[in-house]
Image (cartoon, one colour):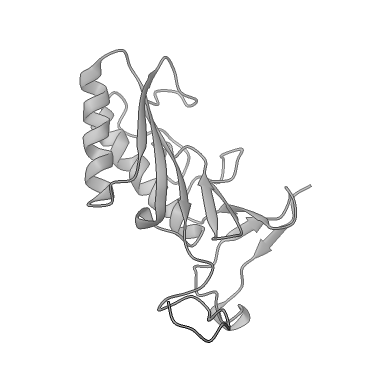
Length: 176
């Protein structure tokens, strides 16, 4: 059974942890945090992201075009659903202490047989990613999990275990 823990206030966290307060489930194994950030639908039967060491890897669930109440938005509009999906993906990543700039790879699913729908979704994803040209797979599928859902994006991200400006000194006395 999952144990819900609050990440606590900034004063209660270790000095290296300045991330947002989110709910984490410690239910898979030691070292894996399942993240359910506030602001995303609490009705989802899965975590929105998972974080693990080394390098604070984050694996998101597929971000869906749902509002905070769990309702599908923009029924029939691929581009509008893709915008909501990317907003939700950013929320999930930020809840796990990452961001779009930390993404290693995305997979974009579009429920369609029409390439123009794939392109419409892809344009929104590319715009949201900005200049961060992470590898991605774009896939047309028959159906997605929620009623009226047309778009879903999952991501794998990684960030340093340490905070900037530099990693800890390895103690060899030399310079990089």
